[in-house]
Every structure is written in C-alpha cells, then in structure tokens.
Image (cartoon, one colour):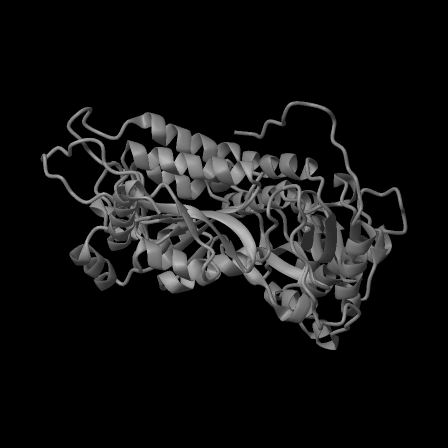
Length: 516
C-alpha cells in the first residue's frame, strides 16, 4: 500500500476513536451515573450484533459557541445509521447526551432529516432514541437555524403512513424538538429519565414526565423503567409491524390451535347486565397463547387497544372495557381509538372490534369539551378504513358507540354477535323510564314499582336482543351471524382467512377532512 494513503487512514482512525469516546470520559461517566446508557450502548442493545453501520460520523460543530469555548462534537451529537433487528433492516438514530447535552445544531438537524429520508426511500422502519437538551445556541444567529429542524420535521411527517416510526424518549426533549416524539407512531418513555416539554412556564416533573404523558396528555404509548426495558419494548413492538405500508405484518408459527374452544369464556360475563367485567379476560382467551400487546394502557382505560395474533397473523384489537366507566366513549377514548385505527389502516393491519359500550357520554360538561366533534372524528375515520374489519358484539352496542365500532351499515367485513348482545339507541332502563313513566308512577303508588319496572326492562331487553333484531336482514340493527362465545377465536380466524384478499376502494378524491 502506498504511503500517500497513510495520512488519510490516520485521520480516519482518529475520527473513529474520537467518535467512540463520544463527549469524553467524564461526560460518559455522568451519563451512566444518571442511570442511562450511552447513545452507542443503546444502539448496540437494539440491533443484531455486528449489523450496525454508521453514517455521518465525520460531522463536527462548525460554529463557535456563545461562550467561545470549543467542546468535543463527534457526530454533532447524534449517532445514526442502519442495522438489523431480528434480521429485519431498519434505520436508526440516537441522540448523544454526552456531547453538549445532546443539544442539536444545524448539522445535527440536517443529519436527522437525512436519516428519515433514507429510511423512507428504502421503505424500512426508523427507530429514534431521544436524549436532548433542546436547540444549541451559537454566536452567529443566537440559536439553531430552523431550516434543518423544519426539514427533519417535514420528512418525519411526509413518511407517516409509509414506514413505521418508533421513538424512545430516554432523556429530556424540549422546545420545538418535543413535537417529534408526538409525531411518531409509537412513543416509549423511560419513567426515570424521560422528560417531554415544549416550553413556556416553569416545567415540573409532574407535567413533563412519563406518567403525565400517559395518563393526562395521552401522548405516551408505553412506560418503562430503564433504557434496557425501552429497547426490549421497541423490539417487541417492531415484531407486530410491517416494514412499510406495502408489505404485510410478519406472520409467525404458533402452537395454539385455531379451533381452540375455551369453556371458561362463558364465566367472564356476569348474568346481570348491571355488573361489569374486565375485557382483558376475554381478549386473553381468544388470542394466540393469551399474548396481548396493549398500547396506552393507562390512558382512557375504558377503551383497550393493542396488538395480538390469531393463528400467527397480526391484528389490532379495539375493545370497550365495561370494568371502567361502563366502557363509554368520551373525548380521550375517542382520540385513542382514532389514532390506533388510522395506524392499522395505513399499514393494512386487520381491525378486530369487541363491542360492549353504553354509548357516548351525555351532559353539559362533555358538550363543552367537544364530545360531538370527537365522536364525528371517529365516524369519519372508520368510514375511510379499507383494512380487514371484523366486529364482535359481546353485550351492549348502544347509541353512537354502535356506529363507530363498526355496525353493519359502516361496512365492516363481518359483524358477529354473542347471543347476549343488544342493539339500541340507549339502554332498556332509559327506554322504560321514558316510555312507561305513567305505569311506573302507578306502580309506585301501589308499592310494586320494582316488579313492574323489572318486567318492562325484561321485555324491552328481549326486543333489543340480537336474536330478535337479526331476524330482519335489512334492519339497521343486525349481525351477519350469532355465534357461541366459545367459538369467538375460531370465527375471528375464519373471518380473517375469508377476507385475506379483500379489495375495498374508496371514492376517488385527494383526501378526507376530519372535524376540528
């Protein structure tokens, strides 16, 4: 080898060594003392061993900081490239907090914009690991130029619905950059170190932490206790997702019999409809091996959403949970529902709706919060779904909840119902109070109110029952077939097989417009 190359190889080696040392030994030690992995350790844990290839390692700070002090800036504070997770190619990036607290410069932003565009063009998922103090200040213009950040955010938005985008929030994320985790398809937050904050008034741990963004803002999908757990969660999540919107989510081999009948499913739902039950018990009995990957577990808990498999095929489950607020729809559950079904449709993942809801919540409080537009948004979204859609009515399908969860005229592929199911504009108790109020007044005077009331409720409930209403095929309230609850699993699998090659085309238009 000629000596003319020696100098260049030496420079290359020095660059690599500097990149590996990141922000220096002291900063690395500080990072670990905070209970956090370094940017490179996170990548090593995420990807298959030996599959990570870095790009952009030569980039360095090209502007003098405000204090005039030159600091190490390997990679400009972001390590990025491509690798494989369980053999699947992905693009990834990891903000390096040891380099100027992960604050992004112009070049950082342009690097991030590029890695997203590369992922989109190569039709592969992108996983980001955020740990950043925000935007970096400099003397020339007082702050990070917005062009690079705008390009990053635009690319991130443009490839929405084309490639899966997973974000791990493993440290702070503030300012304009805080919008990116929320733009992601899924956000995983480390409860101990993750902090998301746009700006403004003095921030607090309560308002910026993982629990807040799970339970209050609804912007968090998973809470974890460590970087290691966050990475494991991302790997588990990716297994349910396709490479892009043109490919199918990966099937797996399963030893769970597709025709399995679980006798204990009959014991979950109480005999008296006034009593509740936990929908998780039913979900676990019908999915492969009882494995359910729940999303936004502690947000709007009266609606349960997540991924599962049926005979090895990935599906998304949306289920009302009577154990929480009687499974009603309100503004938060509406938002939770809307976002999840739009993701499923974007990536052509089947939707399984398990229905047991007493409808949308009425009242002045909810009207002021915009319950109508939230419900209308659900109607608009479901009307445009073209993925496989299967509705299972378990017990109550009242009011608007019946429609948004996929009633017969909303064009689901199949509507199946347990014989205990009921269709109604409202519950039989309310109907009895409205229609038979005179008879109830007389019964109250005679002292047999409970007897008369229960008789009327029983009559109305029988009239609203699936077994009665579905005698009329052209009825608004009908199912394609009533099923034995013990056959729920096998019927879902058969319905998925029957619709595997379905083609549903919407009216030709540029886009639809959701309510505000």
